[in-house]
Length: 320
Ligand SMILES: [Zn+2]
Image (cartoon, rainbow, N blue to C red; front, side, top):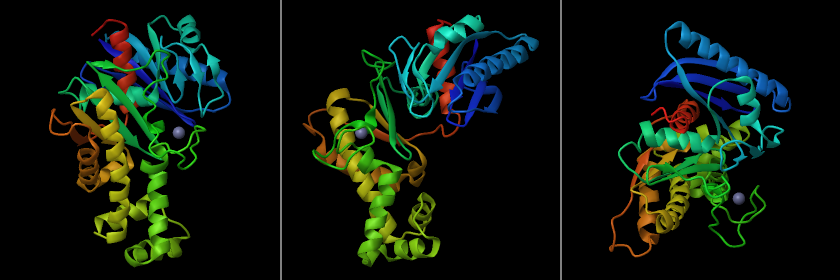
């Protein structure tokens, strides 16, 4: 049976009807307000009703609805403890939706939903244990262990960006210091590139672009990587080195068959994966005495959130 996935962002809500193979068969997208929580609820209800009506007209039924949003969500996939981009605090969102929509509903962290989509329909579809690290502005992630999404005892687990790499290191938005997010994120890549630009030498092309455009962007670094610029390549290798160390620590705990690397920076492919693999092997505990994890780039770029939310909801409803 088909399910509906909804992905609530800070400025827009995406929704889709998703079939059993993870294919989007209908979609919808509407603007929203981060502060008007009633409008968010009303918009989600309208989108579900609209998408459901379209399916009923085709003679199809909807098994369940999965809603993904950034934030901490309780272990029963019901209440949003805290959302960084929306004014929700202990919001019983599932209960509110269930009162208005007669269909099973789950609420899930957006990184978990996207990771689940990658596990079911993307790079992780052939393994049982997978860790995904998504390199965006920050570092997001999800864990699948024994074919199940790992959520933690309170639902707030798998915040992989806040694995501590450097005791007393750079301050992080989470309140701690030295998190991998400060060393392995898109923002960290720009900081590393900026330091290389300051130093001159191999950073001179980075410095030239920074002067020309008044600052460095991810696109500058990506373009220079494409062109084989030694400064940009060095920045990506440094980033990969940190991520590889993080993967080695994660492997000691989770022993996944596969690490998947997603996000914009992952578009550089082996330029990023090679240093990740090298640092992983260098730091892997008891190397040589057990099988080693593989590495892959994420296959699902867009819509992973809605696809994963829909599939998790279908599992929850038992309609698999
Ligand atoms: Zn942190």
